[in-house]
Image 1 (spheres, rainbow, N blue to C red):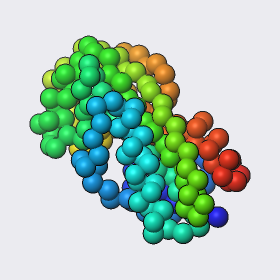
Image 2 (image 1 turned 135 degrees about the vertical axis):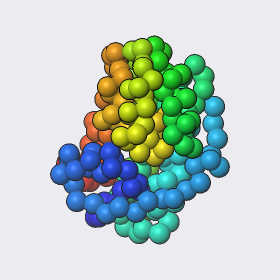
Image 3 (image 1 turned 90 degrees about the horizontal axis):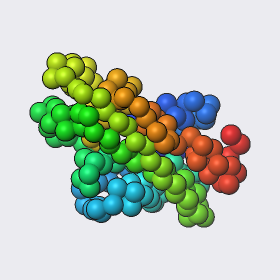
Length: 188
């Protein structure tokens, strides 16, 4: 059975590449703003599942892999910044704070409609950030594509320490992905 990634995300493609999977890319293109939830874990789950369902409607007999990430701090959810200015504001607010990075991954068999979702959390404790390094980061990375302006390879430079899942690096929790793919009969 073919595998379809419901995302154009380079980090999610990298996760599947790490596992040596052959897959197609079919972005869901859902309206993420239409799905609201105050709890970051529930929001990530709803978005991930909505992406899987959307792609499954037009992709028969496939294993659909979808995911979403949410950044939260002190009860506020940080979505993708609208521009570089908002990204800078986000990052300034993260200085010397602990930020939660929540990812959800959904694996769905489009034929049987069997679906599984897992949610993982990471906490990144940010060190004191300088204006010049934030400006350099925003200039070097396409931060408007990432929740909370979290480009995985770049944002790690700001972390004093990280706890929880390593999911912020790929946007997909690989341990959960492997287990779910195996329950759907994929040899990983």
